[in-house]
Image (cartoon, rainbow, N blue to C red):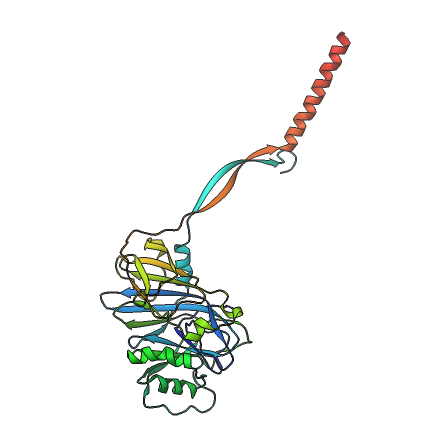
Length: 359
């Protein structure tokens, strides 16, 4: 089974989400269960003129829980649509180090002559609370998605609990800044008609795009406190994040106001050649550069969002080439050499016999 794909910023465990789910930064599983992001990739297209971000993500997870949903925060109400996953493979190929072939001579013996987030339970749904409002509910790919806004983080936590989530202090703390800033939260669950399959620790699903208005482009990097501090070793041993960002020139990434250092590195930056432009459902800004970031930190310093701005240094970044050493063979026909050896042997023997007869 495919073990990655999807997107999101806060995973929230619930009741029936199966082994194919989307990415997240803030797991909140049911009591005594854990969820951790193992690997995730995101494509962000920033339209500076329109102040609009297109955000696509996919991921894989390690989990003790079989079913959970997730929340994604955005500064404004998002437009939701299914995304083409081939763009990730195309971008990974575009930023891969070039191959540099170096030849060396090698004698090669041969034979020449003789051998050719579930967010509600299956029980009756609880009535909505006034401080929590549903702005939209729709099917997107494998998901049933609900866009929410709330006036109180505690009320939102209660709303989620009544629909199958386990309420936790870390999740409520994670919700507070988004509620205070009037951000929207999109809750996802696997659609009821999607086969959940067998229980597994590797989870993923098809990519989905979110498009929304924002003053600055960002990646939802914040995570609940328990995701950073108390994951067991078998869930937190390794994780990786790759962000492909399209914007005007080379980009730089900072966590919040910059007080916390982003542990990731810029691995590639520059304009793409025409043959490397990925298949996206949104148009790239004219003259857009691609900047690729990689972050392998675990636990991740997810205390704020990852903001993406134009870098002071605008030189391209390319990884050093991968050197591939290949031999330039010089055929050494063993059978021909053997034949020559036999001929030389008989010639030498005949010469020696002739000399003895003359003597």
